[in-house]
Image 1 (cartoon, rainbow, N blue to C red):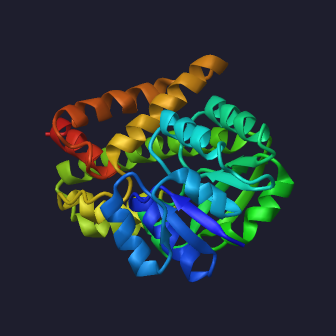
Image 2: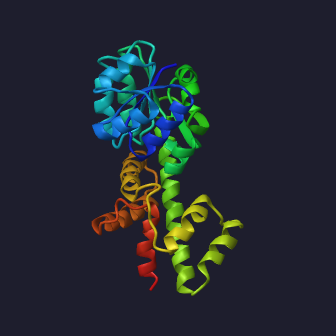
Image 3: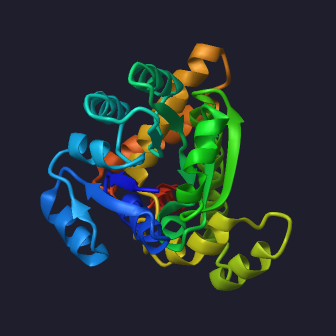
Length: 287
């Protein structure tokens, strides 16, 4: 089965390497040619000059790009050359409406579309342990599964087109809540002059323990915010969640608070740091 990867950011590069390791990757496309050619040379795959060329030469097209407009612009281009029976798997975080529009464009070309956002960050992409939530036709998922399993630890079919993105919205809201709770609690601990490494260790082993505390607690309390998941990207995702929540009448209290905090940090120049940079605000506010 021939697969092509479109979008070679921090997540896409890790995904592409794992797909190549499994023997499925035929080629890559990226808007930045230098990055694309470095990876294609490393993996011994084709660097396609245009996404249309990639679509014409593979059975599975994998997308991992920044925003809704990027997804739709790429799908529109892919649709001009894609082969009937192909599957496009979008692993970007976008809205349900975007997924439905993309699926409709490809259906006209007898190609399938899966909205398949992932969770697990750069570490998960590198290690092939991503959790993937999929919306779309189940037969198309089974067709793509051998490729997807090369970069995931869990694949869950959530239902019709758009349900993958709706599930990712749940994840992003929950991640915001965890970020708020962990950063505020650790800022409180620091204000109490507690030994921070011991606080993190003992709480990680109890009922309040969680992945974010275990993997980001020590770095944030030492002022290290190397991106695993960029704050500006989570801000973008939460704006999508905010629109979806308002359409359905769901609560946006946590979403609104986190967006406001992120906007402040972005304005101060911290948008490219990890989301744990929220600790910057909490530590200041606890003084």
